[in-house]
Length: 263
Image (tube, rainbow, N blue to C red; front, top):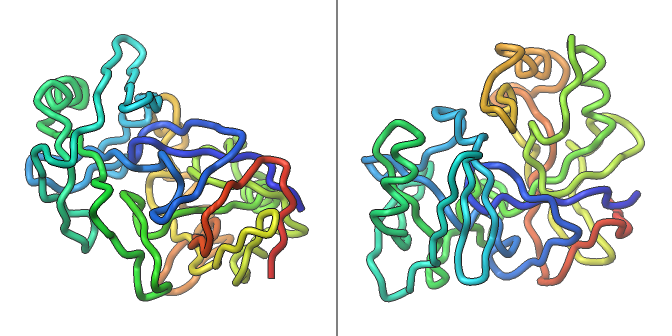
């Protein structure tokens, strides 16, 4: 099995950036979800409540970030560690971040239609993964774990039940492979990409984000594919499942085309 494609997400819940390789540091994928939008209460904002975030294309710049909404661009410098901090809440975690300033807040707020701020992950902050499923690992602004791997065979099975086929970008993966059968990824415990070890810690429970077109921000099939996926592959207490969350156990580079071994 080979690594077919890779992507990162510079700003949580904005569009993907496809890449030929992902570099892993102690916090996860370098450049992946190191920026995030928060609301007036300093709580994280995603496509769950703001599907229009799918219309924003981020680009990593040296020392900063560019966001393009199709009509205008915003360039933001990475805030300095000694600059203003903003305490935010992401699910159960509350921690300090770096505030990206009033200009970024006004630009995003005008386009999203509500008061918000752009924040960056501070390199001197340690955020643990969800310790219910994994320990001794860090992440940034991901929901709970640093990487997500998905299986093309599972998407084929889901698409066969839908009125119109969906692209894989609906599921916002970091890594894409084609396994021997659908849903086998739910049982993986270990993944190695060219020998670099990753623990497979928890199948990925899905939410309404997969109903949102990742280019337009619209929901062309209503509650599909979430309702169909629930009927095809779900577990009590977890809901619809698609993909496997990973925790890396070494630093290194994951390159498209690399050999992938699982067990």
